[in-house]
Length: 215
Image (cartoon, rainbow, N blue to C red; front, side):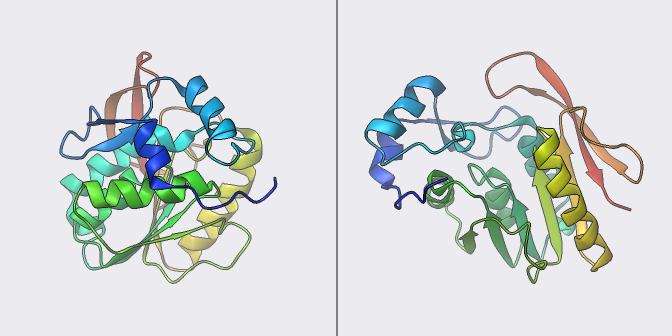
């Protein structure tokens, strides 16, 4: 994918609205009602849309579940450095900071996500998020906790993510995975921490969404 230039915050503000995720109403996010229209605007006005849909413009069930979990169980992240893997909107990163995380590394390959994370952090009155690109091919960053929401959405991504999460766990990090029952997530070796009923990001049916922990 060609490298996209940095995305203007004004573009995101112009093409999104503020909303409160159903499971995490304490927070607000910049979200899009018309994803197709947003994608077209990204191509014509935003400097290029890239190959992926604007995942950053929605509150996905796995991310909502992780955000809810860390807010309800702040001891999970309090005083620790956290990696939000596949950060998207930054919902999980923001929740981790509100729960007392010492700092958050938000990883996403999409430059639109980088701008969205910064805007959503400002919107919710938090600071301390460092936004980076793809970390899956590198050594584990210096973090204590890995939070990964909705990262196993297809076979290729799952094949990259699961070894990374396993290596993080073996390296001493606590690893949590938020997932709405996708077929690519193995049940072996995972411990259920919590389960929530979450309305899907596109307004579709409610999905039973689980927060899993690597043991």
